[in-house]
Every structure is written in C-alpha cells, then in structure tokens.
Amino acid sequence: MPTDAAEARRAGGAGAPGGLRRGFPAGRAALVTYLMAGYPDRERSLAALRAAAAAGADVVEIGVPFSDPLADGPVIQQAAEEARRAAGGPFGLAETIALAAEFLGEEGCDGPPVALMTYLNPMLRLGLAETARRAVAAGVSGFIVPDMPFDAAGMWLEAAEGLDTVLLAAPTSTPERLARIGAESSGFVYCVSSLGVTGERSELSEELAGYVRRVKAATDLPVAVGFGVGTPDQACAVARVADGVVVGSAIVRLQEDAAAVAAFVGSLAEAVRGARQRCP
Image (tube, rainbow, N blue to C red; front, side, top):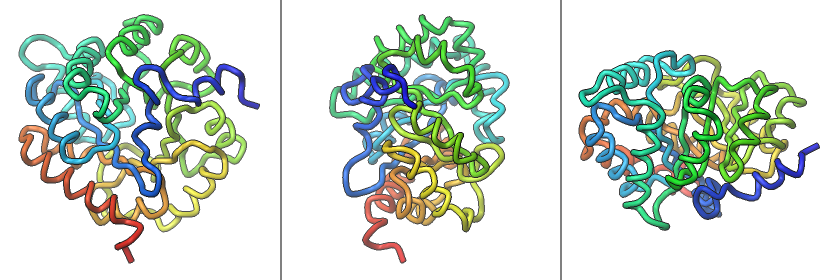
C-alpha cells in the first residue's frame, strides 16, 4: 500500500510547480530529451539544453557525468568521460545542479521541467539532504537514479521531499514489483524498453505495447519509454502506446552542435505530437 509520504510525492514535486507531471500534456505523448551536462563543455551543453527546449522537448533529462555509468551505453559513457575531463575542472553532480539552475532560470515557469539522471554514489558523496536542498533551490523537479536499490530507497525518498523520484520498470519486472514501482514512483514511471544499457536499437521489441499496458495497469502516473529509441519513426511508434518517449544517445551524439540538436529534437517532437493521428 502507498504510504502517506508516497502519496504526497505523487501529488507533484515542489522543485517546480506541478513537478515532472507538468511536462505530460493531455491528449498526446510527451517528448523527454536526455542531454549530458558539461559535454563537450559547459557552454555548449547549456546551448544544447536551450536548443532542445526551444525545439519542443516537454521534459528535459540532464545526465550527471559519472565514472561508472553502469546503465549507460557507449555514447553516453564517452560523453560523461569527456565532461569529467573538460577544461575548468571535473564536471559532477554539484556542477550539473548549477547548470540546471542557470538553464531553468532562463526558461522561467513556461520552460520544460527538469529531471537529473544520476547514480547513487555522487549523491552520497554530496550528501542526500544537500543534494535535495540544492536541487530544490535550482528548480529541478525530480531525479532518476538507475542504480538505487529499490528496497533501500527510503533514505533518499525521505530526503527528497519536494522532488519527484522516477523509478524504473523493466520487461522482466514481476507484477508485484510493478505494483511497488507504481506506488512509490512520482512524476512518471520510466519503462526500460529492453534489457541492457542505453543506446539506439535497430528495432524496438514487438512486446513493447503489452509491456507498457502492464505498467500502466500498475500506476496512475504517466508511463514513459526509453533505452533504445533513436529515430523519429521509433519515437512515433512508442508515442502511440506510451505517455512519454525518452530519447538520449541519439541526441547526445549531436551535442557539439546546438543547431543539429534543435533540428533533430524538432523532428522528434513533430513525430511524437502527430503519432496518434498519423502513424500506421
């Protein structure tokens, strides 16, 4: 059964009004764009964030550079490594929160809500309470922490009051686990489309629609699909069955050129927005 604290979290994070749910419009799927903080350097990552927002991202996911990104594929791993080696000193969680604060300060209340995707180690190093305090002050709406053990998430969920915590479901998740994920997650539920690390796939699973239906039956939150979506056609197909489409590696590949990010995100946004009318 959901706890009172879980119900409060699900009502919406306080990091930004309405939390991450604000990025999921009624009547169509949302486009969630992942970009790596500090890659290829701070200014160009900020330019890429601006470009993605202007081109139609409904939710912006900012990756935190980390030395052991076990859930990430080669494109994001390489970007994280370059960000950590960038001139001006290592780029980590504190620097990513500061970058998010600058981006959100420019976007204002009408900009897309921001989630940080990070790992547990950087959060412990900064301190869970301090991580939450800085994120709320920056206007961040939520966190995605793929290596946080579900059964040991209590300390973070307590510290993260006012922030959404997005939990991940996998195709192998049992009905009992999906029920707990649906009850304890806030903002949205993140469906990993296939087992393995992030990165584009040539084809999406034929079982995706059934998998999404199982997750949606376990929650009243929006359900977004990521890991493997890399083209407008794939985004269109996912948008027909899910409430959100997460695209990461295919955008990070373009991050050195904000104009290229804008063009690609624009094509994704068009595909997602028209999915339920135009896709076969």
